[in-house]
Image 1 (spheres, rainbow, N blue to C red):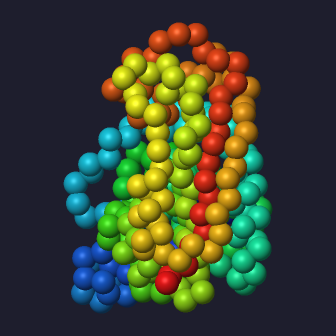
Image 2 (cartoon, rainbow, N blue to C red):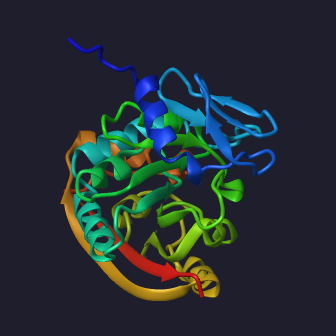
Amino acid sequence: MSKRLTKKELAKERFAANIGAFCCPLCGGEFVTTDTGVRCRRNHNFDLARQGYLSLFTGRQTSHYDQTLFLARREVFSAGVYAPLIDEISSLINALGIHEPLVLDAGCGEGSFLAGICSRVQPGGMIGVDISRAGIRLATSHSESIMWCVADLAELPFGSESVDVILNVLSPANYGEFKRVLKPGGVIIKVLPREGYLREIRQRLEGVAPYSNEDVLAKFEENLQVVQSTNLKYQVNVNSLLWQSMTKMTPLSRRHQISGPHPKQITIDLEIIQGSRA
């Protein structure tokens, strides 16, 4: 009977198969794999964590998202709240016709979204990156063949023109870095909230102004050529437990008091923009 590989051993194989896409966050040099992780030519070493992720973030942890938020988000994804979005993004990636694309989820959080599309597309590799170590640690509990990495979107540890598809789902963006690491002919798929997104939560938060994505959309259009844009709007039935998880995953609820009973449904209202380098 063959020995069952540990998470760290499986992660080592995945990173080794895609090592050419990565580069040292300290000097930009190419990596080679080692027995414990990766090393660049200037001998900057980065070891794989026992849980199976690689930390290539060299700064101080500044993420405001903690384990409570990430666990709540895991519950929301498990309840299927974002299943239509997962289906839509999977279809977009498959329609690109790129043979075995290397897919990067920039700002992956606890990884549920990337894990959801993993079985629906045929990638050459999948990488989930987030600055939060707590999020990435939780992401490693997914069983899908994904490379998880702690890294800063402002200094992505990837070589120039190394990634086919960048996903940026309800997360901040760094378009300078996105354009640098994107291959010619590659695409960036950004998901941003529209005015009705989580409307029922916003209506119950005291002192929260109506949301507009105009500034975020303008920034995207300023940096990228828009290939296509679609809206995805639907409602999800919620019970008290799901309502609690959805409010906990929303950073706004930390600064504002929620009042009133939970609604029977909650609105998901998103814009999906596909862009390329101009």
